[in-house]
Length: 611
Image 1 (cartoon, rainbow, N blue to C red):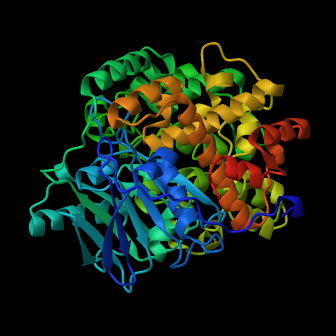
Image 2 (image 1 turned 60 degrees about the horizontal axis):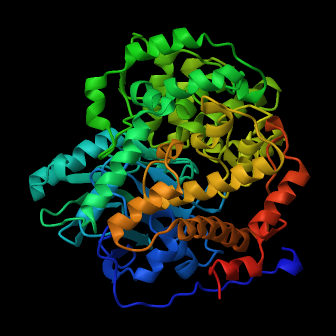
């Protein structure tokens, strides 16, 4: 770390205020210590939510406050924080059905986050808590049931080793038989074999169909021997809104604009696969063959075939709570060889990573492979791209293994081997960068900060590339492509425009992840919208200036914690995505108040991250 920018481990400023937030929040935190199988309920001070908002922001706050940056991701000292926000579960709010998970990633050792939809976030608030903090380690595999503000520790030996679908159905049956609880008032987060076997990119699956992926948090729960977390809503619980009339007026305005947005309309009808493929393909920017060459797709035909596989009626059962976008689709394949009915693959986690990236354009195979990843509890993006790295290493003679691009049967076999760490799957379970480094060709792993990436291969999209290079976790959401690729008036950025855009979109996503609402609302929603919604819901003064500062604080605090954890920072893109000019990167650092990628002490004090 640069001596002129030396940072020591300091606690956050925390000025305790006796009153807790009443509107939009429940005002309570539940801490579960697995080692002692005990729980503790704490209040959330109002000044804390005014500084950190919720969700991702609160997760970062608690890590800085309670977890030494040197803690190993797979250790008792690491925590898993599941945090809602002030808009979570608020009926009529834009996309209110999400929750943010914050922890240290076993894949890259960074403090990071994953946002996921379904029913869990609203159900947690209706169970009486804004935040759930899990620490320690169980003595044996168990699953947790949170009901009536009590936590029950249940033996998971009969479902340990089961896939996500089998375990979910078994837990649901037990809930009904022993507690009289139905699927309608409970939500389940659980891991598959990949999490149990500590695959570095194992997901946590929510309500069976929704994945909190990318960062390997499934392995963190697996290490802690937590097979599942069940939350049961309370009949007597209500999430209060401060000014219902004002909230309704502003929410209707936002949702009307969302429904009129072309990208969101396509997400509603086609899901992310159809909506994004049509746009990214116009730039010949869909990544393929481990980012070594382009693939020609007949997009009109692909979308036609895709629409034929979507079951809109069944999809309604899988939508996130209260969502107006409804991008999550239920699909039915047509192939007799890869016949399956289930959750829709996304553009990035399906068409790209389990499709073009490994030399496949067969939609039925992609549907099958994505559902298999979900059952195993594997992140689909990292799985496909790690297999692509293997394929290239085999082609280069570095590894002796029988696989090539488009080898569908072997790819399916490898997905199962990764989840169980069998044979070469044990090495693949460590991620693409580990594999590429071990066999002497690091360039074959298209990773940023050791996380597999390549949402879009458009070298000229400098705003997107700068945001990706400086990402705190290593990748970015598809919304980052909004300005340069996805919008009707897309235009490429450079210079100060690229810097402004990268900082704006990074801060905005930090706020959305803290509200907690869907990132896809970021195609429309802005700070003015959020200010009006949050003030009406909470009764607190969340003006635009305060929100802008919160976004800046969260993003800078993440960077600060990871600098403490790693001792350095690097914002270099993989060579196959092209570099970001040093001049542009330096301008970005200057605007952020960072030195060589690390926040200065002055910046940290200005944002009240440290004293």
